[in-house]
Length: 63
Image 1 (cartoon, helix red, strand yellow):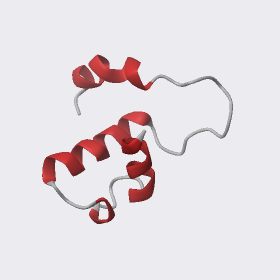
Image 2 (tube, rainbow, N blue to C red):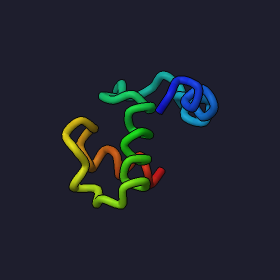
Image 3 (cartoon, rainbow, N blue to C red):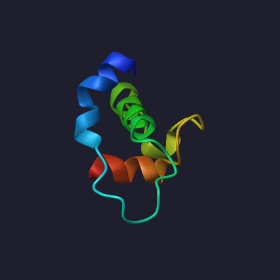
Image 4 (spheres, one colour):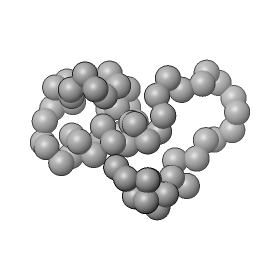
């Protein structure tokens, strides 16, 4: 995802306050992983290791 593309959608992924545990992965990285699954049609569990754990990506997608 380019910086220009991220700038278009970044506001949709703003933090919901400063409470809780800080995230392990950036929202941009999680969105890129979701886009990868949609674009390639691979299963969640088959995400390349370059992305966060599939379960984290799937939970982000479900939200």
